[in-house]
Image (cartoon, rainbow, N blue to C red; front, top):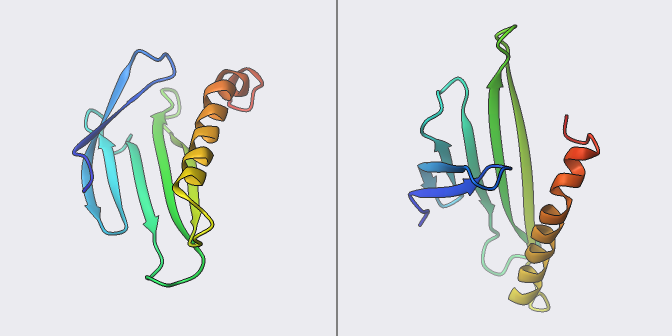
Length: 124
């Protein structure tokens, strides 16, 4: 069952952003920042693609965060997003430790690279 709220921090590492659950089902959950308007949403989506029991292949979890801003001069709305996909093989050789290691390494990459990415102009 999805949590009713999720709290994440802004880049300043002090400002909390609270996402409230909009809806959930067997294939995912959707969250929205309640303080944001419908025309300038900030959303967080979880989507699951899980194979049938006994099926070969990978199960996938996709997490997408979106943020919209309005240009005060032109009035145009722009939306940016970031997406992470976790793909877990349906093979007994792949363990929970393998999944935990992959997630930890990805988190470490994001933590150490966040300011480098911004300063190297990969983020406008």
